[in-house]
Length: 354
Ligand SMILES: [Zn+2]
Image (cartoon, rainbow, N blue to C red; front, side, top):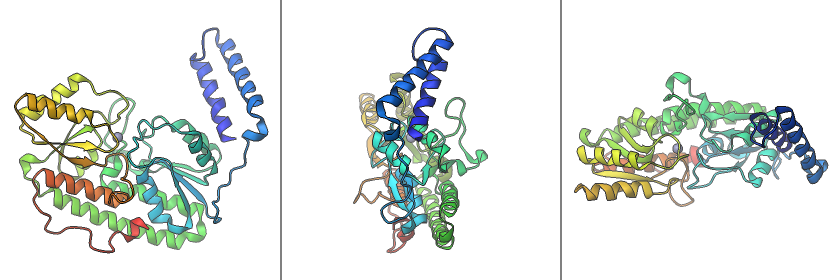
């Protein structure tokens, strides 16, 4: 029934803001009501109103997550006590992603919906919020207190990319723990223990990143990417961040923005730029070509996982793996030299990957 609620709300909103056509407000509302009635008749009320399963095949509560990063928190903390479903796979851009009919069915079947929030999932927020009438729906990044967020004017009041700072992502983990305990009070002890393990691992990851990125020579500590996903990263780990696009990929990069950044790269003799796996590389290629034309060759420092995890076998298919990959790629490309105290000793990921 949640889908139907969403349709009603959607039509009511269209009627009130006039997007369904012309005529008086009363006519528009009448038209919207008639459209809803027609839709009801067409799909058959009984067929639409499928009672949600809420538990998977093994009788475990179904937890549906939007991004791989959010799912990794749920997997690390919920372990085998939950049945996990992730909507966005490797390389998917969450700013642009729209819910498919399969996603809506998955959301309906969930006992708990976890999404990142702070407007990250800008194009699928309606079906997510429609679920809040019938089940817990939680934006985990909103566990980060307002005073610790990067804030802007306008639509993006807060930078949504909080997973880029492992200490902030740990706060999101705390929210996931609390929600999983509410869902499964009998599992409190195991959930709390798994959460404590994850917190310790994220703290270790955070300290390692500070140290590792601190090895980049001060005059080379500049990270250039296609969209502004690394603001928290730069703030936490002492790296200046320059990007062509803002915190969303929801608009085309303008020629003027590209040229302005080329000017900066040439003037400051910046030697490397980075591609993101969830953003088409054409903007970064334009920077490389533009700099070359100005007699300043720059290299592509590597591929970073900004808004999505990597695929199976990439080494970046967990949050910890993704984070380590990004830190190490940036440190190496910007001249940090070999890592004297590397992370990744056997067994250290066990809490986050099982
Ligand atoms: Zn982004």
